[in-house]
Structure formats: structure tokens, C-alpha cells
Image 1: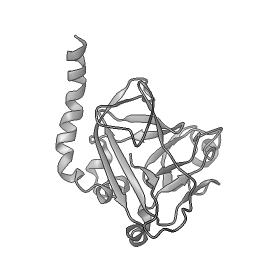
Image 2: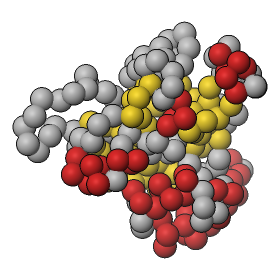
Image 3: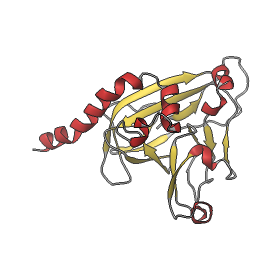
Amino acid sequence: MPIALPLPSASGERASLPPVHAILAGEAGPVSLQALGTGDALSTAAGSPETVIWLGRRRITAARLAAAPRLSPVWIRRGALGDNIPARDLLLSPEQRVRFSDPRAGTWFGTAEIAVAALQLTFIPGVEQIAPRDVLYVHPILSAAGAIRVNGAWIEAAHPGTPEMDDPASPMRQELLRLFPELVTLRGRLTAAATARPAATAANAG
């Protein structure tokens, strides 16, 4: 679930983007991406809160993105995906899946709702992949798969047990491992942590 924030350029160039923030729907209320931490509970589309079991942060320089432009974030402007969706500008990694349920989805994708990679939405006015610039990628992994709300848009939450993470050819897997290569060795521990989470919750409830 890589979400991006633009950073000041090391060269001192003027930013090409307006201020972009990410506000997530937490169980206890809105929480900024900068303030998010492991153990925080986020609201999900299923109605049950899920816990952040791992949080990765990685600064990616403009030079690196120039060498690997496919990793440059996708900029989704306010309202590009529907009525006030997102409610403010949002930057996502290219392979991050967004739930798109605007009436246009039926025309374009043949279904009323679809989870589609942000990069595949760049044909929509107001959605574009930005030119290389310094960004901070933040990647929270949750205790269960599902969708969370960020800036009013539903995006698919990351979970170590998803089938895509078993498929070496998956663009999502390839992107995640390029941005956060430590996930290669961490996946087993994170899967175990996610599996144990419901049992721990039930024990605490009793």
C-alpha cells in the first residue's frame, strides 16, 4: 500500500506539486500518514478495524526515479475519481490498487466497481504519473487484507498473504520489492504476525 508524499528537492528547485497530504480513516478518527505508527488501528471497508503490523518508509530521489521512471507516483487530483473522490490530492505508487466505483467504471471496465492499479487510471483527466522528483514512500501492512480510506478514496490495503506476493511475475510484487527489498526476508514474520493477530484479539476480549 505505498502512499507517497512529495519532498523538497535537494537541488532547491520549486516544487511542481501543490502540498499533498494523506489522511487515513483511523478507528479513533482521522490520522495523518506522517503520524501513523505500528499498532495503530485503521477502519476498513469491511467495517472491522485492522492493525498496522509493519510500517516502511523509503525516500526515493529524483535521480533514482529518473533511472526507473515506472516507480514515479501517480497523482490523483481531488474529485478525479468521482464526486469529491478523493477529497484532496493523493499520491500513490503506480501499482497501488484503487477501488473505482464511479458510474464511469461500468462503461470503461464493464463492472460497477473495480480495484485497479493507479497507473491504469492515468487516462482519466486529473490522474497522471508525475515527473521524477524526491518523494517519501510510506507502506503500511495491515493484519488482514481489505481496503482502507485515504483522502476519501478506498485503496486496497497491503497484506503479506495476498496471492500476488506469491507470484514473481506480479507487477505489484515487483514494485513492492524494488521499493522495500527488506520485505523478502520479513514476509514470513509478517505473515505469522497477521495470522496470530485475530487470536490475540479474541484472547484480549475474553
